[in-house]
Image (cartoon, rainbow, N blue to C red; front, top):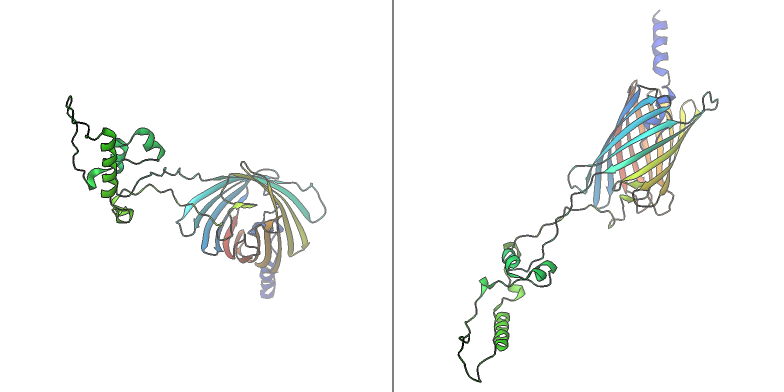
Length: 345
């Protein structure tokens, strides 16, 4: 009886996992399988992208639930730390997935479509910059300068706190100072010249720290200088946008799965971008598989990334995965590391 018990245990351990879980293992792809109503999965992925001078960390938890036969709803959130600027919520993406495979289809092929909309976090409006002249009092300028000059920034009010002018005689009312007396226009010109000569040179102006610092807008992360962009093509994390994917799966063998996606991204107020994703997964142990994934734009200069990964199922319905990738163009990350888990219920 001992040999019979050992045979049953070995059979249980060597039993391949159901193909229903295959597509959930990938990082860059969507699968075509939709779970039954009341069943679903929880996924969470951590990513590190090496983008030259600026690195990006992100965490993307998601939830999928079957609500109708062959139809599921999903929601995914995105948190990121770009260029070490501290972690922040970036976007939320609700979506829907439909299994389009004909019923009683005999071939080992499945089709599906998914649609989602990404709502990005709106940045706070930057405070308007305040124009000022070093060494001048902004409060004094706002009250002493004419309204038209202060609003346009073309003239700044003059502050006499740093210097003084000698008083000029002013003609008393009804008193004639004679033909040699200065006219009001000449007095004004002399006053202007005296002010210009007495005013400190720009280099000797009071330190900028003495004046109130103008309000600065929040820093905006931009990968353009490094050749990377998060607001172009299918790799867009900065705009509100609609994403659609047509997915297919092919069981090449009992332990080999091929998945492909055709991707369309339509940002709000922009034009559509198209791309692809493809993945191949090979199971070589009952609980362990390895795979290859690729994702990119239908543009030679666009985002193109390849990734090699391992997928481990320590217990039934729990998948742990990790992968290392690299970019193929200047618009892609120099390198990447991803890790995640999938819990299926």
